Image 1 (cartoon, rainbow, N blue to C red):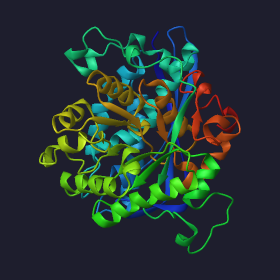
Image 2 (cartoon, rainbow, N blue to C red; image 1 turned 90 degrees about the vertical axis):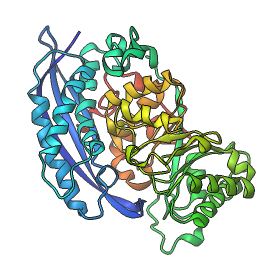
Image 3 (cartoon, rainbow, N blue to C red; image 1 turned 135 degrees about the vertical axis):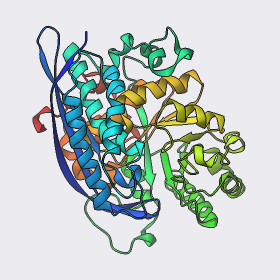
Length: 443
């Protein structure tokens, strides 16, 4: 069965972070959430509404040294309005992945038509379009009365991923029933306190403030460490310190870490030196590193000298900001990357197609965050729970804007009230993406 779009509506929510998070050296203290509702009809005339939500992560998806925050955010909001009109004008019965495939070129043209001193990057367009795509998948699953992950049997992959996938269906690369839980990755940002000595003024807002407090509060086992990529000694010391504090706080835990340089390493030699020094100073800490995320510049075509073959022999090196399509995934493989970070903020359609491609090419897979609260975190957790080989999901909105999660937590406590280091995902087998079913009273 296929569905047809009847109406598209958008709305915004604003939240302030309880503490700033640094991205690329820029402190971020707020978020604008784009919420999208899409009405679809079935050939029999049944009408269903789907819901999608995503932070407009302009600092991450549209980094600029010349355009201020308000300008890049405003560009995303202008683009959202244009995407809403483009999406509403699509009147053919189709699967959500087919619709997204047809409309993405129009979204990119709409972004190019917004005249700024710098063009809107493709990544930024994907982030802006992602809640529209999510709402379509959500509506489609609801129209059939099943999880959207049970609707991928009709998606023939060669149309989207080329001849390597001839005769293959998307359903072969995801599981219909979610695994019962995945590990939670906790973020330690560059400005986050590791101990009481790092706190100048306590917030005293009932939420943990130091790493030991978070470890005890959530029963943590997995930590993502944000690094600078511009200060070798500091990056080494920060990694070693996080390892030390974690083991002192919970000595019996089988700790797992990821390192995220946010593409700021000048070259692969920098990364290799960090890994070598960490191994010298804390062999157990080095063995606990699961993967390294996007160490150098996101523009792979312009930075072909940044090959990762040597680093990938030590630990999986995954692309994040670089991943915008199949072409970028294949180029990353050529340059020595061995893993892929899936993100709901790039769209459900892309996440599932890239998950299939990464599995086909035997790449490491993980699910990363965009400080996603509420429905967008449920969306992220759903990807982690349905893609084979993924065991973890990052979820840091609970750290930086917990108020945005509260309306959702009461009816989805396994996803938002973490006590054993795990995100419990059994309840994600609801129709659609499983989000609005959890909190329909709030929408």
